[in-house]
Length: 424
Ligand code: IMO
Ligand code: MG
Image 1 (cartoon, rainbow, N blue to C red):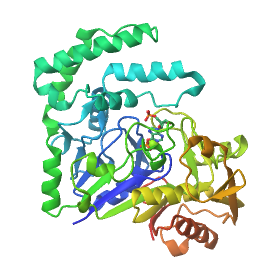
Image 2 (image 1 turned 90 degrees about the vertical axis):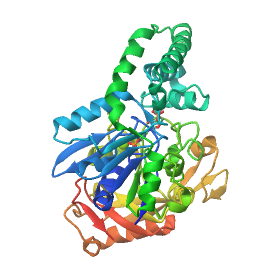
Image 3 (image 1 turned 45 degrees about the vertical axis):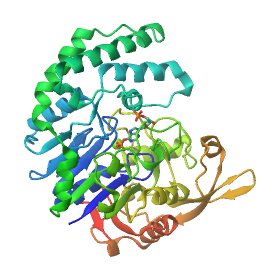
Image 4 (image 1 turned 90 degrees about the horizontal axis):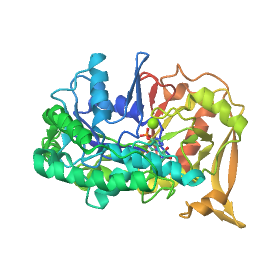
């Protein structure tokens, strides 16, 4: 039996889903525990690309049970689209996709409030995905959120929803100058969704705890990354959920004593989408080179991703707050042609050298980076399947990352296909 958690250890988009897909071969359950349709998880099998936003990537295997935990905020329209798209491509989720009764719903007003709020903030915006994530988690914390279980009691559900729409309409119309939402239309749409979602709803906390007791293999699939964590990330330029490994417990209801392994996924360089500090960010010219080679465009929004060198300070911090047992280093092949590769080992701020992550985003915004230079390997790695066959310079670069992050490396990815994975 094993319970493993896969988490993003930078600013998201670390190719977590590719590692989840690789590890899911041995899993009985694959579980999403936080975030929502802001995630864009890409899996490529035999050249066929699938992008998941809510459904765990393990659904690609016909016999895996996939779970959406209570920590997720669920947009029904995004979920139904995803189910439909999978069906059209020959993947049936019925009987093996389960959603917690405790999961909060993302409502149309959440999406509008997210988008309007961002527009209103102008140059101070966070650069969210516009998927209603912040407002949905805000309602959850304010105890006015609507959960899947609420759909069971129609009268209570309708009255809660009406109340929320009326309040949201006040903000949408009076502050943002938007059109109000029509209460009846939203209620009807959610009652329709209720009928469709019924077969998937379960007490997944009980289900997972039973699975643990029966010695099943459980794989948790994190969304976003450690530096986007609402508590530990580059606040306020973060998402609205806890993204670190501990969230797997909170977002499903299994105890921390059950987790055997935490695998941190890190790119061999760094990317971030949206605003906020990014010490190792490239200049425009270099960013364009890596963005083109790495296909660094958002899977959810299509936005070009910001790109930079690998940051050892952030890697090390991420290893600490996640309690990483091992690393999966991805997209090594993107660096194949570079003559020189830089690694950030520390920051300089007001004549002081920092090796630990500064909590204040303002400080992080103004640090100077300290780099060490590594010679590139300048040969293709995409066909390599054994660690010892990697060029010596690639191995020494990877080993230096593992040393800086103080965590053993277990997997290296040299391409987006399932096959292009090296077990170290
Ligand atoms: P995956 O799971 C990268 C970023 C957004 C924005 C901030 C807040 O594919 O790695 P939100 O919509 O969550 O309120 O936006 O978080 N963000 C992500 N960046 N990968 C993701 O998910 C992200 N999900 C949110 O760009 O900066
Ligand atoms: Mg993504």
